[in-house]
Image (cartoon, rainbow, N blue to C red; front, side, top):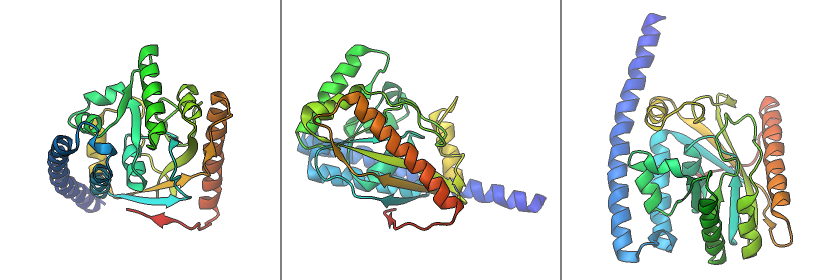
Length: 274
Protein backbone atom coordinates (compact mmCIF):
# COMPACT_ATOMS: atom_id res chain seq x y z
CA UNK A 1 0.00 0.00 0.00
CA UNK A 2 2.82 2.42 0.88
CA UNK A 3 4.60 1.62 -2.37
CA UNK A 4 1.40 2.17 -4.34
CA UNK A 5 0.83 5.56 -2.68
CA UNK A 6 4.44 6.54 -3.30
CA UNK A 7 4.19 5.66 -7.00
CA UNK A 8 0.94 7.60 -7.26
CA UNK A 9 2.48 10.69 -5.65
CA UNK A 10 5.54 10.51 -7.90
CA UNK A 11 3.28 10.16 -10.95
CA UNK A 12 1.33 13.25 -9.89
CA UNK A 13 4.52 15.27 -9.42
CA UNK A 14 5.86 14.22 -12.81
CA UNK A 15 2.53 15.13 -14.40
CA UNK A 16 2.58 18.49 -12.63
CA UNK A 17 6.09 19.32 -13.82
CA UNK A 18 5.37 18.32 -17.41
CA UNK A 19 2.13 20.29 -17.54
CA UNK A 20 3.64 23.36 -15.86
CA UNK A 21 6.30 23.58 -18.56
CA UNK A 22 3.66 23.33 -21.27
CA UNK A 23 1.41 25.84 -19.50
CA UNK A 24 4.15 28.46 -19.10
CA UNK A 25 5.06 28.02 -22.77
CA UNK A 26 1.43 28.51 -23.81
CA UNK A 27 1.07 31.62 -21.63
CA UNK A 28 4.14 33.18 -23.25
CA UNK A 29 2.80 32.30 -26.70
CA UNK A 30 -0.61 33.70 -25.72
CA UNK A 31 0.87 37.02 -24.63
CA UNK A 32 2.89 37.30 -27.84
CA UNK A 33 -0.14 36.48 -30.00
CA UNK A 34 -2.38 38.88 -28.10
CA UNK A 35 0.06 41.79 -28.33
CA UNK A 36 0.84 41.05 -31.98
CA UNK A 37 -2.81 40.70 -32.95
CA UNK A 38 -3.64 43.93 -31.17
CA UNK A 39 -0.97 45.77 -33.15
CA UNK A 40 -2.13 44.32 -36.48
CA UNK A 41 -5.91 44.24 -36.02
CA UNK A 42 -6.54 46.94 -33.44
CA UNK A 43 -7.77 46.99 -29.86
CA UNK A 44 -10.75 44.73 -30.62
CA UNK A 45 -8.68 42.16 -32.50
CA UNK A 46 -10.61 39.34 -30.80
CA UNK A 47 -13.77 40.24 -32.77
CA UNK A 48 -12.05 39.56 -36.11
CA UNK A 49 -12.39 36.04 -37.51
CA UNK A 50 -8.62 35.51 -37.36
CA UNK A 51 -8.58 36.77 -33.78
CA UNK A 52 -11.39 34.38 -32.83
CA UNK A 53 -9.41 31.50 -34.32
CA UNK A 54 -6.35 32.46 -32.30
CA UNK A 55 -8.31 32.63 -29.04
CA UNK A 56 -10.02 29.30 -29.70
CA UNK A 57 -6.74 27.60 -30.61
CA UNK A 58 -5.17 28.88 -27.40
CA UNK A 59 -8.13 27.71 -25.31
CA UNK A 60 -8.02 24.27 -26.91
CA UNK A 61 -4.32 24.05 -26.10
CA UNK A 62 -4.92 25.05 -22.47
CA UNK A 63 -7.73 22.47 -22.23
CA UNK A 64 -5.30 19.79 -23.41
CA UNK A 65 -2.72 20.80 -20.80
CA UNK A 66 -5.36 20.63 -18.06
CA UNK A 67 -6.45 17.21 -19.24
CA UNK A 68 -10.00 18.27 -20.08
CA UNK A 69 -12.11 15.86 -22.12
CA UNK A 70 -14.92 18.04 -23.46
CA UNK A 71 -18.17 16.60 -24.80
CA UNK A 72 -20.69 18.88 -26.50
CA UNK A 73 -24.39 18.13 -27.01
CA UNK A 74 -26.99 20.27 -28.77
CA UNK A 75 -26.72 22.89 -31.49
CA UNK A 76 -24.79 26.10 -30.82
CA UNK A 77 -26.80 29.12 -31.92
CA UNK A 78 -25.24 30.80 -34.96
CA UNK A 79 -27.19 34.06 -34.55
CA UNK A 80 -26.33 36.88 -32.13
CA UNK A 81 -26.96 35.24 -28.77
CA UNK A 82 -26.56 35.68 -25.05
CA UNK A 83 -25.29 32.35 -23.73
CA UNK A 84 -26.10 31.73 -20.06
CA UNK A 85 -24.49 28.95 -18.06
CA UNK A 86 -24.34 27.53 -14.57
CA UNK A 87 -21.03 28.39 -12.92
CA UNK A 88 -18.69 25.89 -11.27
CA UNK A 89 -15.13 26.99 -11.92
CA UNK A 90 -12.84 29.36 -13.80
CA UNK A 91 -12.35 26.33 -16.07
CA UNK A 92 -15.89 26.97 -17.37
CA UNK A 93 -14.52 29.74 -19.58
CA UNK A 94 -12.02 27.38 -21.19
CA UNK A 95 -14.59 24.63 -21.77
CA UNK A 96 -17.15 26.95 -23.38
CA UNK A 97 -14.47 28.68 -25.47
CA UNK A 98 -13.34 25.33 -26.86
CA UNK A 99 -16.90 24.67 -28.04
CA UNK A 100 -17.48 28.14 -29.46
CA UNK A 101 -15.93 31.60 -29.37
CA UNK A 102 -17.64 34.27 -27.30
CA UNK A 103 -17.03 37.39 -25.25
CA UNK A 104 -17.28 36.63 -21.53
CA UNK A 105 -18.59 38.75 -18.69
CA UNK A 106 -16.64 38.00 -15.49
CA UNK A 107 -16.26 39.30 -11.95
CA UNK A 108 -13.76 42.13 -11.56
CA UNK A 109 -11.53 40.17 -9.17
CA UNK A 110 -10.45 37.93 -12.08
CA UNK A 111 -8.38 40.87 -13.30
CA UNK A 112 -6.06 40.43 -10.31
CA UNK A 113 -5.21 36.82 -11.16
CA UNK A 114 -1.55 36.33 -12.19
CA UNK A 115 -1.12 36.74 -15.98
CA UNK A 116 -4.47 35.02 -16.68
CA UNK A 117 -6.32 38.19 -15.71
CA UNK A 118 -4.26 40.18 -18.18
CA UNK A 119 -4.85 37.65 -20.95
CA UNK A 120 -8.58 37.65 -20.25
CA UNK A 121 -8.75 41.42 -20.50
CA UNK A 122 -6.73 41.48 -23.74
CA UNK A 123 -8.98 38.84 -25.31
CA UNK A 124 -12.14 40.86 -24.73
CA UNK A 125 -13.51 39.74 -21.36
CA UNK A 126 -15.79 42.37 -19.79
CA UNK A 127 -15.44 42.74 -16.04
CA UNK A 128 -18.18 43.69 -13.65
CA UNK A 129 -18.02 44.83 -10.04
CA UNK A 130 -21.32 43.33 -8.96
CA UNK A 131 -21.69 45.62 -5.98
CA UNK A 132 -21.81 48.77 -8.13
CA UNK A 133 -24.74 49.95 -10.25
CA UNK A 134 -22.45 51.92 -12.55
CA UNK A 135 -20.41 48.83 -13.44
CA UNK A 136 -23.55 46.83 -14.14
CA UNK A 137 -24.92 49.59 -16.39
CA UNK A 138 -21.63 49.75 -18.30
CA UNK A 139 -21.58 45.99 -18.90
CA UNK A 140 -25.27 45.99 -19.86
CA UNK A 141 -24.69 48.72 -22.46
CA UNK A 142 -21.59 46.99 -23.83
CA UNK A 143 -23.34 43.60 -23.99
CA UNK A 144 -26.24 45.17 -25.90
CA UNK A 145 -23.81 46.77 -28.33
CA UNK A 146 -21.93 43.51 -28.90
CA UNK A 147 -25.15 41.58 -29.53
CA UNK A 148 -26.29 44.19 -32.05
CA UNK A 149 -22.95 43.72 -33.82
CA UNK A 150 -23.59 39.98 -34.11
CA UNK A 151 -21.27 38.82 -31.32
CA UNK A 152 -21.90 35.89 -28.99
CA UNK A 153 -21.73 36.96 -25.32
CA UNK A 154 -21.40 34.50 -22.42
CA UNK A 155 -22.47 35.20 -18.83
CA UNK A 156 -22.82 33.29 -15.56
CA UNK A 157 -26.02 34.72 -14.03
CA UNK A 158 -25.58 32.96 -10.67
CA UNK A 159 -22.90 35.51 -9.83
CA UNK A 160 -20.80 32.92 -8.01
CA UNK A 161 -19.58 29.37 -8.50
CA UNK A 162 -21.07 26.24 -6.94
CA UNK A 163 -20.12 22.59 -6.49
CA UNK A 164 -22.15 21.73 -9.60
CA UNK A 165 -24.88 19.87 -7.72
CA UNK A 166 -27.23 22.85 -7.63
CA UNK A 167 -28.09 26.01 -9.58
CA UNK A 168 -28.47 29.26 -7.69
CA UNK A 169 -31.00 31.93 -8.61
CA UNK A 170 -30.15 33.75 -11.85
CA UNK A 171 -29.74 37.50 -11.70
CA UNK A 172 -32.02 39.00 -14.34
CA UNK A 173 -30.29 42.35 -15.01
CA UNK A 174 -28.11 41.36 -17.99
CA UNK A 175 -31.06 39.64 -19.70
CA UNK A 176 -32.22 43.11 -20.67
CA UNK A 177 -29.38 43.22 -23.23
CA UNK A 178 -30.74 40.57 -25.65
CA UNK A 179 -34.25 42.02 -25.28
CA UNK A 180 -33.03 45.46 -26.32
CA UNK A 181 -30.77 44.06 -29.05
CA UNK A 182 -33.40 41.69 -30.45
CA UNK A 183 -31.01 38.77 -29.96
CA UNK A 184 -31.43 35.15 -28.87
CA UNK A 185 -30.84 33.57 -25.47
CA UNK A 186 -29.37 30.09 -25.10
CA UNK A 187 -28.79 28.11 -21.91
CA UNK A 188 -25.83 25.75 -21.60
CA UNK A 189 -25.42 23.22 -18.81
CA UNK A 190 -21.93 22.51 -17.51
CA UNK A 191 -20.96 19.34 -15.67
CA UNK A 192 -17.61 17.96 -14.51
CA UNK A 193 -17.45 14.23 -13.90
CA UNK A 194 -14.86 11.70 -12.81
CA UNK A 195 -15.58 7.96 -12.77
CA UNK A 196 -19.27 8.60 -13.36
CA UNK A 197 -19.68 10.98 -10.42
CA UNK A 198 -19.54 14.75 -10.00
CA UNK A 199 -15.92 15.81 -9.89
CA UNK A 200 -14.88 17.37 -6.58
CA UNK A 201 -11.64 18.89 -7.83
CA UNK A 202 -12.92 21.17 -10.60
CA UNK A 203 -15.25 23.41 -8.52
CA UNK A 204 -13.67 26.73 -7.54
CA UNK A 205 -15.59 27.48 -4.36
CA UNK A 206 -15.40 28.57 -0.74
CA UNK A 207 -11.90 29.85 0.11
CA UNK A 208 -10.19 28.56 -3.04
CA UNK A 209 -7.53 30.79 -4.57
CA UNK A 210 -6.44 30.60 -8.18
CA UNK A 211 -2.83 29.33 -8.07
CA UNK A 212 -3.31 26.47 -5.56
CA UNK A 213 -6.45 25.37 -7.42
CA UNK A 214 -4.58 25.42 -10.72
CA UNK A 215 -1.75 23.31 -9.30
CA UNK A 216 -4.23 20.71 -8.01
CA UNK A 217 -5.79 20.45 -11.47
CA UNK A 218 -2.40 20.10 -13.12
CA UNK A 219 -1.53 17.15 -10.85
CA UNK A 220 -4.78 15.28 -11.40
CA UNK A 221 -5.79 12.89 -14.13
CA UNK A 222 -8.11 14.13 -16.86
CA UNK A 223 -11.57 15.51 -16.12
CA UNK A 224 -14.59 14.92 -18.34
CA UNK A 225 -16.57 18.08 -19.04
CA UNK A 226 -20.00 17.97 -20.64
CA UNK A 227 -21.63 20.98 -22.27
CA UNK A 228 -25.28 20.72 -23.24
CA UNK A 229 -26.64 23.58 -25.35
CA UNK A 230 -30.40 23.96 -25.07
CA UNK A 231 -32.63 25.21 -27.87
CA UNK A 232 -32.19 29.01 -28.17
CA UNK A 233 -35.17 31.28 -27.73
CA UNK A 234 -35.78 34.84 -29.01
CA UNK A 235 -35.55 37.40 -26.22
CA UNK A 236 -37.75 40.03 -27.86
CA UNK A 237 -41.19 40.23 -26.32
CA UNK A 238 -40.13 38.60 -23.05
CA UNK A 239 -39.40 40.14 -19.68
CA UNK A 240 -35.89 39.76 -18.29
CA UNK A 241 -37.08 38.04 -15.11
CA UNK A 242 -39.00 35.51 -17.18
CA UNK A 243 -35.93 34.78 -19.31
CA UNK A 244 -33.79 34.35 -16.19
CA UNK A 245 -36.24 31.92 -14.60
CA UNK A 246 -36.79 29.97 -17.83
CA UNK A 247 -33.11 29.42 -18.60
CA UNK A 248 -32.34 28.56 -14.98
CA UNK A 249 -35.13 25.98 -15.13
CA UNK A 250 -33.69 24.49 -18.32
CA UNK A 251 -30.33 23.94 -16.61
CA UNK A 252 -31.91 22.51 -13.44
CA UNK A 253 -33.89 20.00 -15.52
CA UNK A 254 -30.82 19.07 -17.55
CA UNK A 255 -28.77 18.39 -14.41
CA UNK A 256 -31.51 16.13 -13.03
CA UNK A 257 -31.82 14.30 -16.35
CA UNK A 258 -28.05 13.84 -16.64
CA UNK A 259 -27.85 12.37 -13.14
CA UNK A 260 -30.58 9.88 -14.05
CA UNK A 261 -28.84 9.04 -17.33
CA UNK A 262 -25.55 8.33 -15.56
CA UNK A 263 -27.17 6.24 -12.83
CA UNK A 264 -29.02 4.13 -15.43
CA UNK A 265 -26.11 3.87 -17.86
CA UNK A 266 -27.90 5.76 -20.66
CA UNK A 267 -25.65 6.78 -23.56
CA UNK A 268 -26.44 9.99 -25.44
CA UNK A 269 -25.09 11.20 -28.78
CA UNK A 270 -22.18 13.52 -28.13
CA UNK A 271 -19.64 15.48 -30.12
CA UNK A 272 -16.20 15.31 -28.57
CA UNK A 273 -14.25 18.49 -29.24
CA UNK A 274 -11.20 18.13 -27.00
